[in-house]
Image (cartoon, rainbow, N blue to C red; front, side):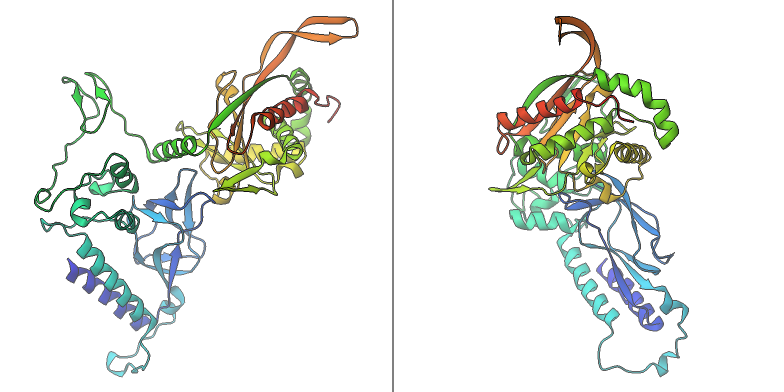
Length: 465
């Protein structure tokens, strides 16, 4: 196996020397302030393919968004450094691209006449480094039984940090492609109570049992699990995005002590104004007006009144955000969630907010959001009313400290104060649910903020156009 790796590298070195091809690293881009890694989901190019500048090379995914990585160079894909399904740290090289210009201009002299050089070629140095890494990885991946098992650099780094030896690592069940151990597998192993075993007890690999999607036999309890499958149950494995969302939600609850305050707002003026003006608004602006931009406008105003809602926590430090970037949680056709962000929402008028909301919502459904459009949020709005729910208790989108849920707008009798006394009238009412991090947001601030949002909604100017 090692000889094959070294022979392959040797061929690539000769190829690069022969054609004087400069090599460049394609780097895993930063996908958000809280995202440290991404999963390679699909290679769009094969080794040896020509690649144009800004042409997509590989598809990647995080818990926030699926995206494509465009090439920052024009040339030939020399080497894929990761396989599909691998988790790659941000900032790591994911592929090697050779300069196409070197290929086109290449008129290689006979090998016998090749000039000798005092300095080693850059490609030789790189290949030598790659060969050493390949040897180290291959050695690390060989078990006692002599069979090779692939481990990503991230998994190996976690293993080294936690003091997990190769013998122990070999016996951790893998859920990745071809039984590979993913980050989630090794973290589950650590959290579930690590079992130290000797070389003797691990000499034989643990047999893998294929999981059936439907059970028609007597209940079988999976080892290490508290859930018992019953006859006729269907077992559905979470997709990659759902697993990441689940991890993010559990992490958020473990990080922030959540408190939720509720306020009911009379949004009759907003409902009547929209019904009266939506046709004219769409004709004039070319955009359909929904309630979401109106809610975001009110939230942005309230944040300016209560800037300590617009913060993040870093250890014992509070980071007060300058910009008001409001994320709007959106459900995807798959049932998963994504949160595109409207940057500097307080600087946009209602028309600008409407255009931003409609554009982001449309491209979210088409899976065409850019990485920059799902990062940098400082506060999140989620509309549980879309599903007919009157209220909810949303989970904070870390590293933010607050999130607001708006419920369904319902007609109900309400008491109104008039110059002739109190009367009962049919009004359009809506609940607002504000969840906040009690480490830095007390009940007074959290409650006052959501009340101010409701005030702005109730004071909506019906004469605006």
